[in-house]
Length: 123
Image (cartoon, rainbow, N blue to C red; front, side):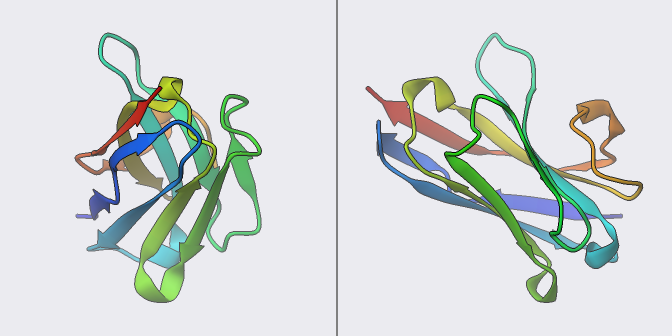
């Protein structure tokens, strides 16, 4: 069973940066596409970014495009989300997720999920 553990969240002022990490275990990490999602209180889970098996292809939600960067280090079984120019509307619990059969923005297509890391952006 694949296990995912997020870290790197915290409190930051608007305009600041955070780097989230997601460490994976229990599977063949290099064969999995990885995604980041977020969920704010009272809202549905929202796609943020995704990356293919080797990092050649990436997807971003329009709301984070040009501010966030997803990357992966298969040797470390880790995926990252570099978040720059953070806005208060980025405040949410951020989850990483994995799937085996291709990059997608749809949360229900992901098989494994971490427990999330909180990102709070002050105005």
